[in-house]
Amino acid sequence: MKRVYVNEEWCLGCHLCEYNCAFANSGMRDMAAALKGKPIYPRIHVEEGDRISYAVSCRHCTDPICVKSCIAGALKKEDGVIVIDRNRCVGCLTCVLVCPYGALTPGPDGVMQKCELCLNNSSGEPACVRGCPNRAIVYEEREAAK
Amino acid sequence: MKRYVIVGNGTAAAGAIEGIRDTDKEGSITVISEEMHPVYSRPLISYLLEGKTDEERMSYRDRDFYDRNGCSVIYGKKATGIRDDIREVYLSDGTVVPYDELLIATGSSPFVPPFKGLDTVEERYSFMTLDDALDLREAVKEDTRVFIVGGGLIGLKCAEGLSSITKDITVTDLQENILSSILDTASSKLMQNHLEENGITFLLGDSAERFEVDKAYMRTGKTVEFDVLVLAVGVRPNISLIKDIGGETGRAITVNCRMETSVPHIYAAGDCTETKDVSSGTVKVMALMPNAYMEGHTAGVNMAGGSSKFQGAIPMNSIGLFGLHAMTAGSYEGEAFEEVKEKSIKRLFTKDGLLKGFILVGADERAGIYTRMIRERIPLETVDFEMLKRTASTAAFGEKSRRRVFGGLI
Image (cartoon, rainbow over all chains, first blue to last red; front, side, top):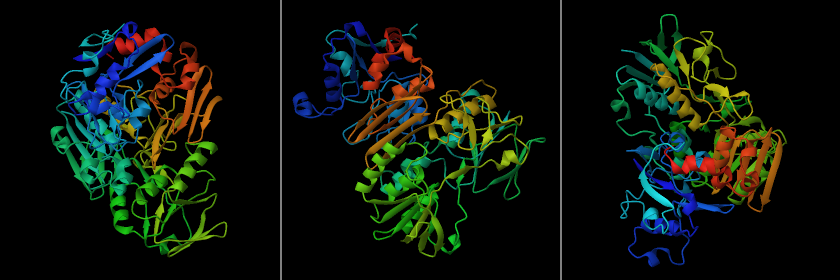
């Protein structure tokens, strides 16, 4: 299955992925109208350490601890993709407590949201990857890293 | 074809059903459910009171879960005994259910202390089951005075849930601090202030000496008048099925990491068990929904002849009350790093070169990064702990770890 992978040496720390993510999931047609002057709630975030930056989104783990931990049964694995039923989520943050990558965050309504690879929005493929100017994130099939 | 029997129909049972079916598609599964409901998310009962969920959405699995997994469910009956020599379970109505592999997933029951005069209180409730919540929702109206005994997770979630119906809620606890099982004094006070701002009244360090119909006479001399009483003092694991046949028990049923009890062909999972807390090395009852699922799943795989181990159990909690979240994990031993702000507290506990536990109130961002460090016992010397004190970030883990996690399938 294709997932979003990180080439950290290529990340410029420009945060464009965050904007493209927020826009793709806004359901709106115009990027400026969707994002300008508003707090954004992307499902990918740029981590910045010492002289390093990279974008983190859901790993779609083969053995997802968030799914096992969700108290509302709101997180599910469908064809390898971890998806959230936002109608069931009660915002208890148990998934935040267990996700080792910080990949789930509350949306503006307090309901959790996460990367679903843009498979359920108008982008159809990860908007973060499509808009990355330096191929610091890619969408492809890979084996387990050594 | 193996006959699997599961006593209990909660989260651990659901985990076991999925664990069995991951391994064995053929065997028969019989579930014995004392409650009349298909598996539902127990912690959601307070959200039901609040109107944030409903019975439909509270179901833990979809409607055809049992059919799809070839399970037959016996509702409204209680398992009263086991004969492990001939592998049979006996139900309250005399039904005999034979098994090849048996799972005890009986959970826990509310503990009701022997308060004097308790039987004179007609409007008396526990807060454990969906039926409790439905009854409470019936009983509490806009002007109902609610008195909750117990300022722990259950009592406070009940208070939050009911506060959307009535503003007259008083909570008492024997301890001076609310949430005393998971918070320290400072973080408990922070949470208490927040609850008081949201209209909850507290009587702490106090307890009811006796009850009289609609009055509680407190040890400190105060009197509390109420219309509805909720007892949320604590829970006791349901262990009698195993204890009665001489199986090993402590405070709860003793299991190994395969979720086997000391009795052959009998497994146990969920709130009725005790397991090793890897953060402290001690055996504890860690009655948490995520643990219940993972233990159930582990038991299921092993019952079906597969091989699975549940390791890395730690106590952990995420409790949100009126928008302020408290997250805790592990054990609070060793040296504490602390960051206190007006509306937040972060405490990280380290000992023997490991992160042992944390308390985060109003500071929950990416908390799972800390949880993983406790669970996997990641040595502090391999991470940038100074960075982690400031913010939970995977950047603190070094390039090799990042490459594995973000550069390949995990």
